[in-house]
Length: 147
Picture 1 (cartoon, rainbow, N blue to C red):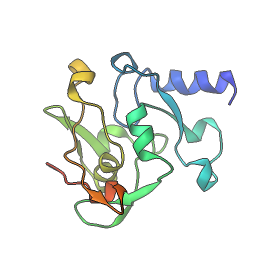
Picture 2 (cartoon, rainbow, N blue to C red):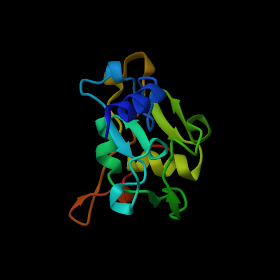
Picture 3 (cartoon, helix red, strand yellow):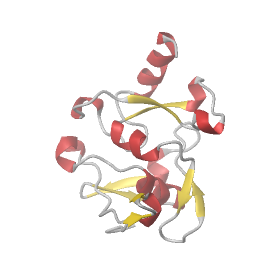
Picture 4 (cartoon, rainbow, N blue to C red):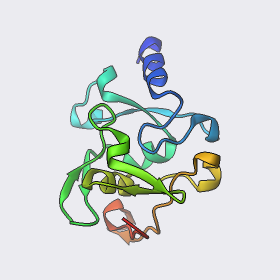
């Protein structure tokens, strides 16, 4: 990926993770540029398919483009920063990220957020405890404190 494309992605994100809204300044680790549709799924390295992402969201989202909505169990696409409006799908309540829609709930489950302490005044999420399924941590089996 060339430097100009990286600059465009970072400037467009305005110093925030495009999935959970964590401020880069509050993170102890540099953000990563994520392929929204992973190369694994034939996603291209173009501006419309790239998002600035904290390591928590990028690491837990992985190559996934969908997951199961914890409220309905239905297969649901994950939040797409170029196609969806964050505030329509997610909100924060007392420092916990809450999904407003099926897309929001599914994305909260697929992207494990940082702790409230790391987020400072922007107090962002905590999504509940993780349970084990299929021998590894699986977002489909997470238990949620709230939806």
